Length: 148
Image 1 (spheres, rainbow, N blue to C red):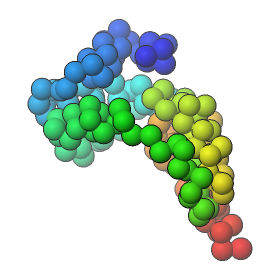
Image 2 (image 1 turned 180 degrees about the vertical axis):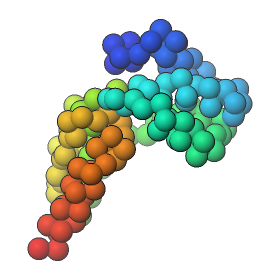
Image 3 (image 1 turned 45 degrees about the vertical axis):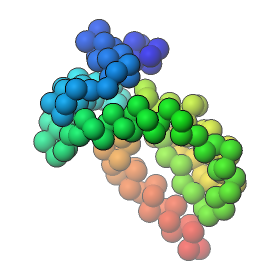
């Protein structure tokens, strides 16, 4: 909430509170919630990209409610991450409000025995959008390093 409050408008903060405190009523309500808070997910929001994302999304209130209300509150595999032995690339956006690097990617990296962490300096939650060229180069170079 502190991240939302520091970055968002009062309307966005209220949408985050409503979206986290109760199930969404229907698909249209979920769409309204998502399009309201979507700018929070970017370091530099581009409304055209937001519109493209909205048009390409199939909204499911039932899916959202199941994921956020049932699955997510009890999902925690942190203690089992050390079982993953394959090379793992952990990617994060520096300005990710919902999963800040210190609370998410850095924790994953610390618990994965064979991982590399890359934080994209100009991105929020979607570095593959905001820093697409750097993202693609990073993934490509990492994959190349595995075959060396």
